[in-house]
Length: 407
Image (cartoon, rainbow, N blue to C red; front, top):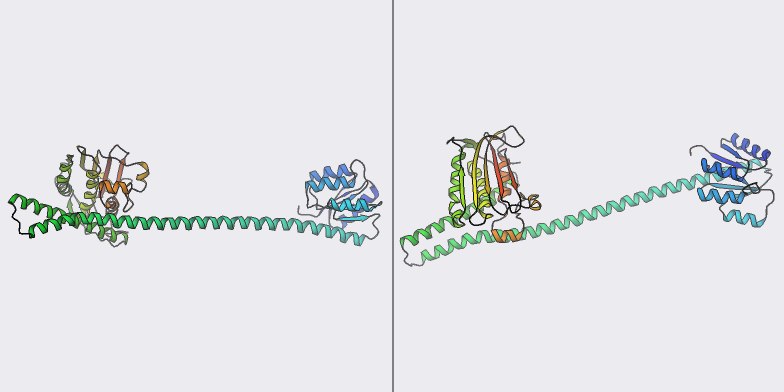
């Protein structure tokens, strides 16, 4: 309602018309009803700010009209007119919510006009107060929602911090174990050599080989930690040179042949006929990425399983038109569940700590390999299902990206 709407209900036509004309001249939109029932029907069809209602009317009396309209709209203001006032009817009218109880005939129209204006103002204030209250309730609800949201965010952040603390603790434990194992071998072999004991040439060769393997393992693990720290800070600089993919892959497979033989794994290497297939890349880090893929394949494949390494040329980096070579590593291992796949390339993450304890490793190999591939402008893709083995592919552009530093 934007205009000032008033309903005048009186069975006396002269009074009804007089009040209607008077109020219309004051700027009110005024409707007239000849009895109580007509007033109720009009009110049900059109909202009004104020109702001026005679007490004694046919069909429905004034108090009945008052009760009905208040049930529909508690904010409407009703002025009861009567020429036969009694204390009982006045009390009942006020009990039912009448704004004022007015005698008729109305003798002082100026006072009556002020009464109607006060009733109208009172109705508008009630509506505005309700609107303000609703806005306040909405604002409070929004504030409570924001507080709940922030509380949940803080709780999540705290849980994340606790998880990070646990992750750091687990990582320190895993790294300590991974570094301690080859270091223990180096220490033991060195102590035996320094003991003055006599060993056969074959035993000396075995000890020498154990020292070299353990030292190499330590070097690889430390290099991985340093490279990952550089990548995380965006400070890893790649040194691009012409590299033979076939030679790098062959070297990596040869490096892991002894580990594969220990588990009786069948490792198959398939190379394209182009012997000198080359790319412009950072050879040592490309070798590191491939080592992690093959290391995982051997690590998570049970004894007597199969690992197949293949080199593909004349391909493109997936979802691009960038010429590339791809090295795929397929295994018949334990596979990767859909839940684990969501954070497969997160640093220091394996399926769970039981997996780490069972298979070893620092849980950063795939994360490091992925970042090395991306630093070359390539990527790593995979397909896997739990219990069905895995297929990983390293895609490296034939030519380097414009920047040789990771982002």
